[in-house]
Length: 460
Image 1: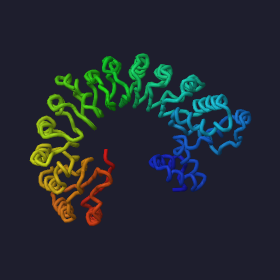
Image 2: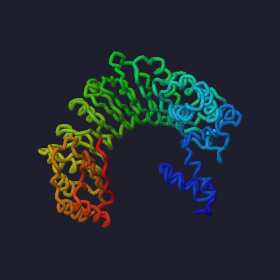
Image 3: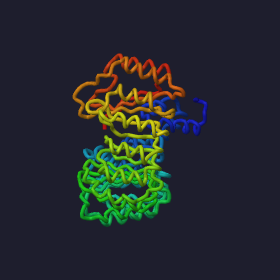
């Protein structure tokens, strides 16, 4: 591999991008590996002393900073920058060495350097910081070339809205926009955001986070959103959030609504006759609409869904899923102890179902009862079972090692059979592997190829 040209090594190292420790090791192998891996490793700023080292010699000498110049032009490798992180880390490094006014001058030079040296920035985070209001980095030379191919934008509502106006004139290829709304009075900002979203040619995902922001009396606050993207994600706070604007987004393929207050769904009834012809994935990660509203929505749109997620579910909703969502591939819901017959019906009628997430223990079914239904009623495509332990579990599971082994034996005898993936969402550290014998059995059937993957996942 050491004989490969740098371009080939760079392509290989792309797959290690998120593994910081492996990438750092690659830097130390030899000169060729270092030249190839440093480009990947420095897509994110890794060291702010190094960034200061890349500044012009005259500026460093004038401010009493180290005049040593780095081995590489690290700035030119950057593809992702966070304004908040740059400001915070530079000020942390320099606050005991130079005055606040001089720190501001250094920051200006850093942004000029970034804009001039980065050929194509991919990710930009504009978030709250007192220095943000004054450093207008978009006006610096070559900023347009740096930002024109931006693909991800994170915007905090306390940032100077003039930046959004300028970005809308430069950036037309953004794929994902994440907006944090933290205050009520931001009409001008919403107008600018509307313009920014509208000029994007290939926008795929829009995320909106509403923190400490009650817009109940301003129902038009979100009407600015144009219908030109596939994925909508809204994370709400404890306040009411009007949802009427969603009715205009008929091109949506995926919708995730994460609200901790059920009042946020009081106006979900307005979608009782709205059709989303392209919607494939619908998720309610915490609270969900009232049964009559959600069931009516599924009656209109369930035929096209391949993924449906509710946090806990109920029997009436689960029966509606069977009736209106025949093409589901992935499902997350809940069944109480006396609703196992509905779980059977789910498996019998959803012929394309490949994965299901269900709750177990306490008021929910025991694991062994779920295992029996999965083995006896799931279709030939099914291969992934996710067990979620209630956050309020007060008693340990009574699952026996022999019950786990019997489940795997019966699964191995299925014809045709896919290797099983078993995921467990733990509760306060509890999961199946608390029992050593169960852990050994799982490892045994992984080696035998009956279990493809077993994973413990933190509860959420």
